[in-house]
Length: 340
Image (spheres, rainbow, N blue to C red):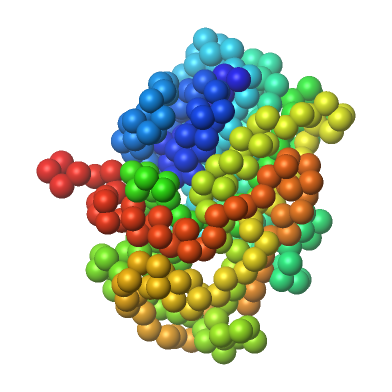
């Protein structure tokens, strides 16, 4: 297939492109590089030995996107381009609704206009908010607790309704906590500014780039008293996108939603201990009080993805910790070189 990948220069997008290329798909990337680097695509080309087309453009730039899609005759769009910091979304909600929802609608209009048959959407477990139980299925009630979560859920509704009204086949993948890096150590997460997620914070604290990590709450009724989450390796997640793209959608259902996770919770302290063990390092951290709004524990029920897409996670938390540190050691400044 010929696939347009929005936000393809980012962390998840670039790893997904590797898997897509290895499955024989032709890739064109659109990315405004607001929180990514074109250097990631250079690495993708190097690792795969295959070409990747690239346009630096914003998804809200209708004229440019219209021209790209007119010339491209795409078989599918995989949409990653979005702002994703929960805290920032609380402080700047209009920024998130304008980009994540307004930009999404603009893109989807062009997808329909140019008769692109498939659309795979990067959603999030944040649509569930604080779930009523620790095991989260696709039927768990949605209750977003941030503008970021709401923006993704709004996009799901728009995509669902669009698929119902047209011939478009859409899939929304609700990610849990994405971690790790490519096993080569050449491609990984390179956030601009302080990261928001636990494993990148562990990596940067260990590297001395940020102060010691704070573990928020050690008195939860869990095995070691700390919060538990489902951590999915970015390469496993990338393969889920390929499975969604290649899935036979001839059963009459135009729209699907899947959780993408391991189905196994890992506590904060367990992740820190694992990182230390597999890499032979010490993670500077301090124990703190609970943080308001943090659910005690939740993890994906990935049964539906396994049954319908034939996908399941195969990489472990040990793999994720090893790969994330390998990326940091080989690329201490991410895609920014020392002499730049």
